[in-house]
Image 1 (tube, rainbow, N blue to C red):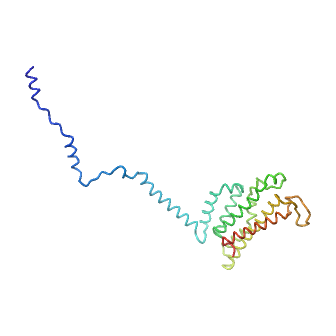
Image 2: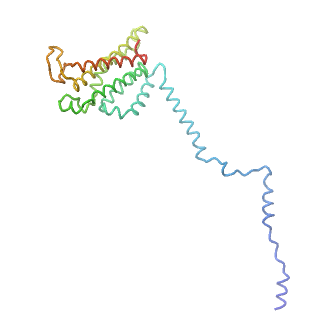
Image 3: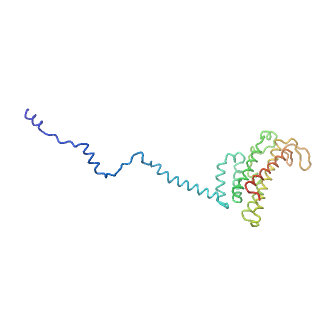
Length: 258
């Protein structure tokens, strides 16, 4: 027993490799100028992937804007411009037009943009906003008297086409260059005049039905109830005249009037 104990005590344990030496030897494999990137300097993968996407979106937007600003206007720019404007202005359009009326208005807007550019389109938009606003004036009173427009004043395609027929003819003549350059300003003036005339008619009718105290029949000058076809009032006539002057002034500011 004593002999075995003596042998165990004299056996040397195998050397344990030093962790420090192992670390030094492993680090000596790497070159001295090698730097391990810090986590804070690493760019996220999402950020790297989003850069090409942002560039492509920016490029697409610039192409769309250049197409919209085409001079002279093209059918492509007219369709694209109207599509964007109608999407953004859909709440206003729905309040003043039926679904089929919106479709007719889209065709009118596209034709207008193609013929006279953004200035002509803004003129028609001004006409629509004013016409819709006066149609809503005292709607409850008009409905009670039975003289209000159908569908709470939301106009259909017939109203849109009827209001813009003369303007559309001028737009077509301008697009196809009827009469040459000398007539181009004439078609432009006719376009503005047609919408001024129609706005005057709409405003005088709606304001007359809402505020007209005495209504006269044009043919006989007899006093007739408000809302009678062919009847006029002082209040409505004055309001219609102001509306026509206002729209003509807008047309002049937008260089639509020669």
